[in-house]
Image (cartoon, rainbow, N blue to C red):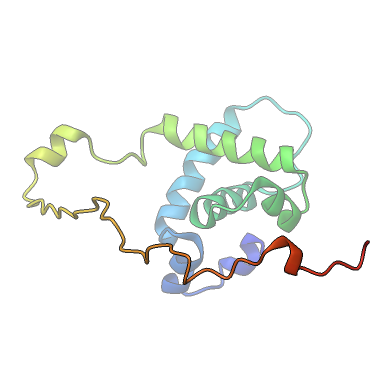
Length: 147
């Protein structure tokens, strides 16, 4: 599904599909456009910048393999990997989409709740093996067709 089809969705549906709000998508796109404008000219990509970002978000959202994503977008598996890695690297290096640090989380008003689950092993009672419960046959009682 290309960006042309996705941009027609309502914001809640867009978020369900991509995992981000349309405004966040546009902010990511502006960061990518800024980096793309600084890039020297070369062979143009088969996919638009919007489609490459959508491919990356699809990978993050669904965690599908590069092979499946490549098949869905009509590119090779290695090309899908390179596109997703490049988009990830650009977004991470921009520092515009990072999570708050450890110190900021410690200062916050959140109250942590800890749940402890006991997962120790317990022995299972099994019936004892004895001769009366088994159905072993003697060798001479077993008839064979291969004599």
